[in-house]
Image 1 (tube, rainbow, N blue to C red):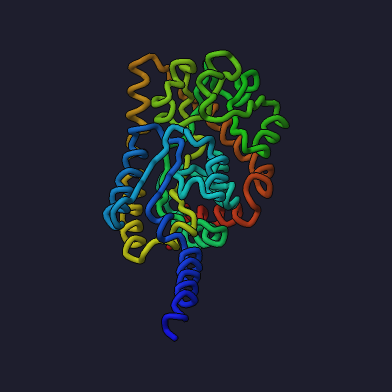
Image 2: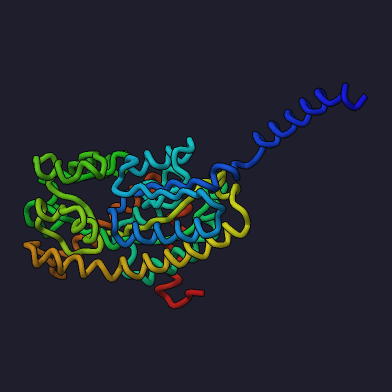
Length: 343
């Protein structure tokens, strides 16, 4: 009887194992291959920190684990990388707000409100106050936030010198192709945005397709933007805020020990990125000045023009580029910080 039942039992066992394999949360595949995309330059501070996280991940895995970072925008722009994560071509990405907003629009409150933050201390305070709810929103969208970072203040690099807001109306601005609301606001105010991907910036400046690039000093140095746009206006227009995110599917496929190792390594990397990136702002400016960069510093009167110009943008930004409730929340946190009510 046992010999007659063997083929049936073997078939049943085989089907059971096959179904069990298909139902696994990709722990036999996703957690052994981690592909991370980013626009950060190869061998930069940000790239090195991503590689350190990879070492922690590999150490917590079994053999044959593969960790790959794709720097320099080799996986496309940030919107494209968000798409690639959704379809499983990437398991994670280090993105600025430009890419993060493709997942959760409220993140724009930390970057898209010009001249709102006066110091890194203000940004740190607001980000930490909003961090729990923000990370919950990302989790609800299927992504786990592992680390928060920033990359310096945006300043304007242009072919010709400019000091006032009106000086830039005769120029053509680089604009992120994935930010139509920003482009619409710029056009309504008499400016000329040219939507491009990051990889197109340098050739676009060289050919005259654009004349001005809003960029952090570190990025301008690393990509050599300043060689074709040698004038920098020294105002802190907005901080570039970013985060390392993984898909929840990838995260859920990791063991608790691996998740703990990733949390520890990522938190450490975020602290390092924030500290060193802020230090490198002035170092990058000094390096570019030695190579011909011309820095223009607005007078007190010109700064008032910039402040008034930025504040006039707020009603246009609230409810379009930044969700109204999040815009108001940031303002409330800043008010508490500035009046000494910070908790």
